[in-house]
Image (cartoon, rainbow, N blue to C red; front, side, top):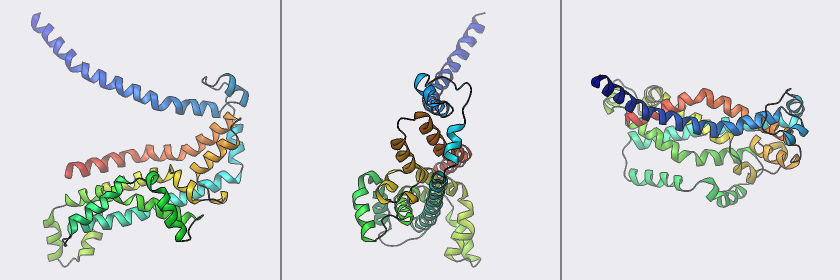
Length: 285
């Protein structure tokens, strides 16, 4: 009996930490999901129900708010602008960061470490800190009020951190593989294009997914650089819509739900790529 009691106590001690882990994770999940659920509930209510019963499920559900937003051309225009900016910024970051990471990881030249340290200084200056110099530079380039300005700024501020991620992954590839490719007549760029990039597919997927999410949710850059409403992206349009329809909380909740829905769906499909890419880079590095 004593041996059985000891085994039960040991089993209980092993399960106790896991119980607290699940408890903490459940609490954090509720903290994140409750505002989202309230927002979706509000989008399916009338204006009066939103004021009288803001936290209860919509019974019955009213879809008029979504129909009103989807039948206007402004939402689709802002959605298209966001897709253009997100796609172009992601492609730019992947090209620039993969080339820069390859240079800093696989090539030798004088001052390489100094140049890389200088590049990583960009992590210390987020867009919120550097927005005024960025605005002045963009204005001098005569790119104010254009989607190209937003794309260039998002690409530039995504280079430092993503180059650091890709460099760690590239360093994990054995040097003997590059030597063997050189013996077979493969050039330096050929090794980069034909061998290194396919091997780094998990890291590239993680960088691309993170860049897409950051670009889609970026509000400050379009707010500062864009003036015409025909160029607004969804985050900027959401802010303007909230100010215009601040008294109609149900309609505002519907607009915010539709604006956040693409990012939520994308993250649900991309989270495995992000975790797998970053984990692979960390383990190999």
